[in-house]
Amino acid sequence: MSIYVFLKLLGSLALLMYGMKVMSEGLQKMAGPQLRHVLGAMTTNRVTGLLTGAFVTAAVQSSTATTVMTVSFVNAGLLSLAQAISVIMGANIGTTLTAWIMSAGFNFNMGDIVFPCFILGIILIYSKSSGKKNGGEFVFGLCFLFLGLATLRSNAADMDLGHNQAVLDFFEKTGGWGFGSTLLFLVLGGILTMCVQSSAAVMAITMILCSSGALPIYQGIALVMGENIGTTVTSNIAAMTGNSQARCAALAHMVFNVFGVLWILCIFKFFVNTVCGVVGYDAVQASTDAAYAQANAGLLNFVLPTFHTAFNVCNVLILIWFIKPIEKLVTRIIPSSGNEEDEDFRLRFITGGILSTAELSILEARKELNHFADRTQRMFGLVKELAEIKDDNEFNKMYARIEKYEGISDSMEIEIANYLNNVLEGRLSSETKAKIQAMMREVTEIESIGDSCYNLARSMNHKRHEKTDFIEKQYENMFNMFQLTNDALVQMIKVLTTGLRADAMQSYNIENEINNYRNELKMQNAVDVTNNLYSYQMGVYYLDIINECEKLGDYVVNVVEARTDTKEKKQ
Image 1 (cartoon, helix red, strand yellow):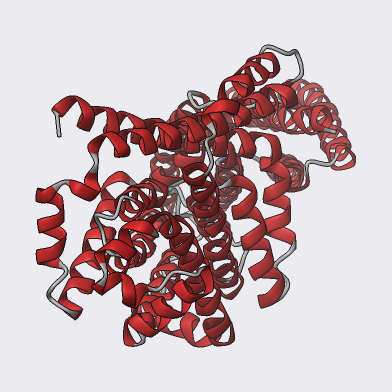
Image 2: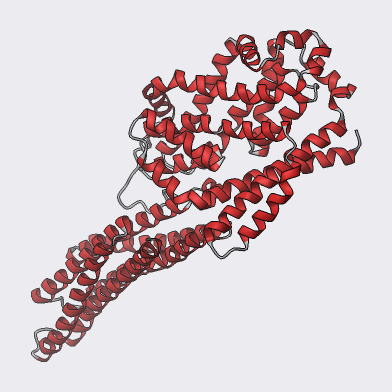
């Protein structure tokens, strides 16, 4: 076997993996928002959760996308752990469609229809409709997938693996260890899948080896079983920076697949022989009759997807009744940290692994923005507490706390903005790009709210160094303004959650109240200073606080406008 043929084989495999990626991304862009809604709404019980997971995975052709999305939903509190487990079970069934697509590509010559389909894809991509462009990407991905399969089959034939003595000797030697051989290929399948992060690629390699007659079916199926364990690594990586519930969901995925492999190993040959019999392939005869195995090697392209489907369906039928015990097991392994402080400013919903499915990362960024806004509103609550503190030590502690949170708020802005920029670098629909740009504006305005909170605290700190204090009337007016400002923040968070125009109108009404009240207090302040009710300097500190509240209200309205404008465009 020449190095050129081997490189062609690797290139064909790369083309296959790229086709799967482009096809999946195209489908996600066409149906991403709808799939998110389906996943969030259709999980009322274990059966609907199972069907939803299967449907979404079959639709986007990526169990990784479904599993990562599910883990993110758990992290965001939109799905319970039990619901997530049922969805992940369904994803294992939905992913079997990929094996059948590959089987079709190996058994039928797709090369004749691929190139005309490329023409269709380029026409769609250069159309003005974003929906057609996404459809064009899907067609291109599908074409690359089948072209990769066609070239893989052609290159495998050139390599003549079925008559390559070195390859045959290796599989004959490693296949003679009985149960040890099965475990060896099981581990190899898991390692290969973890390395390339694509069970489809490893499935393609397995089909080539089996259909060429080089790899016996028992070892080939052991590789497929290893793929099922190796593919769980992605979701566990995605969940590493999430909360304990998200890590539990990812661990449940691994528990599900590992359990399936364990019970299959107990009846391995019986189960494999049964599946082979359904397809019409005699695995027992093939193991002893080389001529029979060579003559019927083509059937193995049907045996492998049949086994993959039967394995996952049977595993689901067994474990669907044990969701609660699985939930208890994973929560015992990964207990809740219990550290959910109100003023916790760390990123909670954004995780690095989510970027593997950029179109579906909008949900995590949206939840993170809501979390950021909620914490900023709590920061304003600390400012209100600061205004009431009389003791110097307590005041200094609270002021230092607000100062610290202002710095953390700046860091959160940078982290969220960088995340959104990274998402923008992916292939996204124009609608999604518009949403991200609006979210970039939101995060900037929310951080400005944090700056205003700190400015309010600084004004109070400067005032504290004076020998005099605000009079009772000033305090009363100031706390009235604080209440209006807090109402604006509460309403902003409601708008961020619902995105409804009716809620946005309430925000505008509160902003008008703040503006009118600011103008009224400004005029009254001039009168009070003239009447010597308090000093001019106290009036300056007083108006600094009032004006800063009005600025904060402006930032709130900017956030509301950014959120509702994108909502209206979507509608």
